[in-house]
Length: 361
Image (cartoon, rainbow, N blue to C red; front, side, top):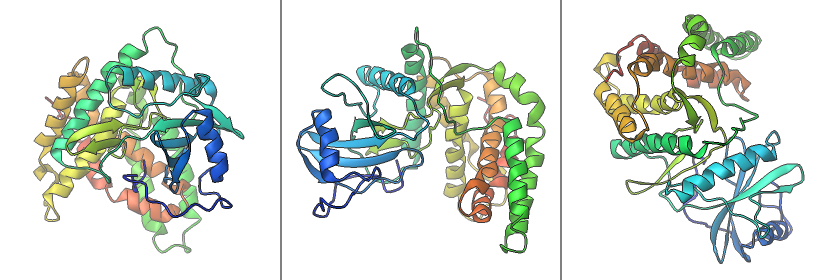
């Protein structure tokens, strides 16, 4: 979901001549898709949600509110059907997520042009992102539940990996940083902060270098599970202090479970700093016990708690994922500005990576 998370549908009178959706569908075209899924007459359309990969268009019929999702062009039907199988399993076992709607023919997807299109039931939730400890602890428990349930769901199923990933191993990240350096060198004399951004990229490469040798060996010996792949707090929806849904399973894949945990833990760490306020003298002054408690909530819900080896490697996994965000910053429209924005947290995550026992139970 985007920062403008849909809460209620507020809509101007429909203009049947102008497309309102990310797919550039008119109301009559969207109605045809709704008919294919036997959802009744559309009574409201809303503006598209600003999502990173797929396009998402909310609409309302007499049967409720739904989200039309058009997948990016690299997705293929076997992958989509695998994800829908997992979502169906989660829904049938009481895990909170957005149900997939099936057509009259029992299919969970159709096509519009070259795009695979699906419809999900909208889950009512509070607007905005939620960062307080009760809700974040609930997210940790939900992640443990999710890993446990996905582990059961995939028994006897052949996994279908995503065509596109949101991560890079250290070797790939190293090459991306080389490309980033070339991009920023071309901005010297053009952008006033280009040299500062270039310094951040070079420091990122220095921080990455120790991981080049150990990463594959360490990760290969840690527990592998089916992970969400994009478990951040925009993808956890709440009503009050209860989780309404975990959404966006586009990056589900088989890999080390520590990835999901480290990915989410970045937001936990930034919350620690936010709570402390601007008068921080040392990163060691942050309430790191709260981060360990967050991991304890995960342990209580998971099929097995984090091992000592996982907790020991976790600081380096947090840094590794953070360095990928630095390496991919120059792919954005404003490469210098994006490096500067993403690089402001570099000292914090580098410090965390040097505290090998900071998450020890």
